[in-house]
Image 1 (spheres, rainbow, N blue to C red):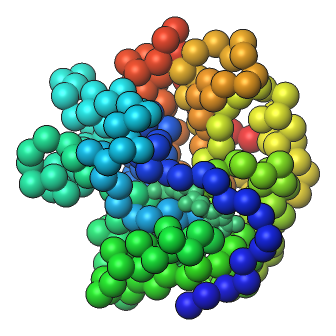
Image 2: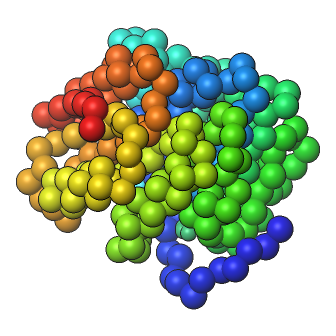
Length: 280
Ligand SMILES: C[S@@+](CC[C@H](N)C(=O)[O-])C[C@H]1O[C@@H](n2cnc3c(N)ncnc32)[C@H](O)[C@@H]1O
């Protein structure tokens, strides 16, 4: 189905970044959250889905080298904590146990984790990415894709009751992504006060990130966990120095798994990296 496509430049291509440190953190955490939510009927809405599956032998991944420094190192590691095991298993399965040539995006991981009776709605605004996504997801039980603005879809289609997980993973090429995340989370929680949301954010400078957290606290009355993975000291605000996850309405026992995921990533893949997990 085709939604309204706003007149904006969409230059971001996740193929350059698939399997990088930020994907490892996000996807390992996503699988931990999903493992805790499945079992009762679950609806997942993925606001920024991407193409679903990435070719690490393709020109984009080769050019950036980010997967080599991320998923390839994780798969070779002997000291990664058990919280990475579900992601590593998914990557192994996708690659038939051989070298890592393909990397799963959030749609692939979510579709594989669903149980009968669960639903997954994957939104992607770029028509070419959506085309690839819909081909990848064809025939998968309980899965729908939309070529549409994911923020609008989350607000309109979050079920008013029952278990819900919203994944928000924007490219942050627009300045208003921070504001739209807060507005979307507030609207989603008004519709379903039990909804869980996992948000991915870049860590460049602390002023931007702290400002976002303050706006979120003002707009949304719900406990949240923040997980920071600082790959290096935040001295250059023009660089992506790390990433953060905000987990709203978190399952009770998520602090330790998030700490393990962020700490290993920062210490093993970063340069003088640090990690911290805290409630807001
Ligand atoms: C970081 S990538 C998503 C990666 C994916 N969540 C994963 O983990 O595999 C962001 C995607 O959002 C798409 N996008 C940008 N703005 C959007 C919007 N308003 N609604 C839906 N998709 C959007 C981009 O084209 C891009 O493919």
